[in-house]
Each structure stands twice: as C-alpha cells, then as structure tokens.
Length: 112
Length: 115
Image (cartoon, rainbow over all chains, first blue to last red; front, side, top):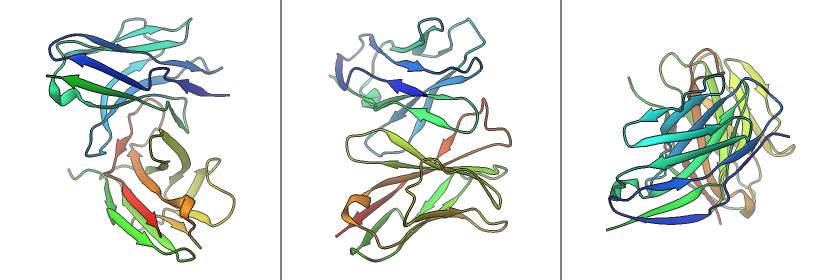
C-alpha cells in the first residue's frame, strides 16, 4: 500500500525562527517524486518544493529545503527564517505515476 | 497562461439533488485529477482522467459519482442524489503530458454544501 504519514497535526514557530515538518511514506516503487504543498487560508494549493527520488541531493528553494532519506522513506521540510505568510497547512505528497498520495497535513502557525 | 479554473467556487445543494463541478485545466495540460478534502483532513484522490479516457478511478465511490473529460470543454465531476456526507471541498488539478515527475497544478476548489 502507498501511504504518507504526517505525524504532527499542528505546529507553531516564532517569526524568523526555523521549523521542520516531518513526513514519512511507504511505497514499493523505486522511482517516484516527492512534493510539499502549502494550503493557506485561501485554500489554494501551492507547490513549495519537489524532490526526485533518484537524486541524492536535497532540494532547496529559497528558505525551504528538504531532508530526504530514501532508505528511511523520510522527507522532512525545513523552513528557515519563518515569515507570517508561511502560516498554512502543509501537505507532503508523492507520485509514482498515475496517482498522487497526500498526507493528512500539518497546520503551521507562525507567531509574530 | 491562466491557471486551473474551477466553477462554481461555492455550490449549495439540497439532499437528493445533483451537483456538477467543472474544471478547466491549464492550457496544454491533458491530465486532470479530482480530489476531495473533508474538513480537517488531507486530500483524497478520486479519479485521474485524460481526454475522453478515465485512467484511474480507484478513489471514486462506486455509486452516485462519475467523472468525464470530453474532447472539448472542461472536465466534469458529477454527484447524483447528494447526501450530507458529500459536503466537502473538491479540488481539480492538472499536469502536462507525462504525469510522472511533473507537479500538479491545483485549481481553487469548489466547496460543496449539502443541506
């Protein structure tokens, strides 16, 4: 079975601090892609960062970076210098071809 | 390049009525996905379509739900005889030719309320 687990339903961080959101997944596939999506109060889903499973180098996108541990099937998201606009639901997902599998999300609140 | 469009944004239906949700993918995208998001939950995959073909409908309830993506026009998610449990946000996403490594671009969602 293909599953995504986000074990932190809610998190908070002080503005300008760093926070890490955890994600683990399970798949028997060897080739797949991993994503973090952000869903702000507007409910629009926005891609934050993407990682190809065959690449060992962790993806980075400005203040967002991932720690991808393929053997452990772990894909955490680190947000540096947190900003108020980062307040949102964050969903971890992976794609093996036809389907995307999403976690249940982590609600992140950035505190001024 | 306009993004993924969904309409209506909000839809209210009484129990037993039909709900039709529309999705226009991004220009050049031929793959469409529908998801349902219940309150306080993540996205649940429903169906994956290409033009005139249903590729994967393993997430669709067996009854009352159907989806299509005709050669011309938007993709339609149809829910017949709606019940209160159908109240949710329904998101459509599209991707380019190959679904593999490409991200999905999401529409703003349709919030269905069944009274």
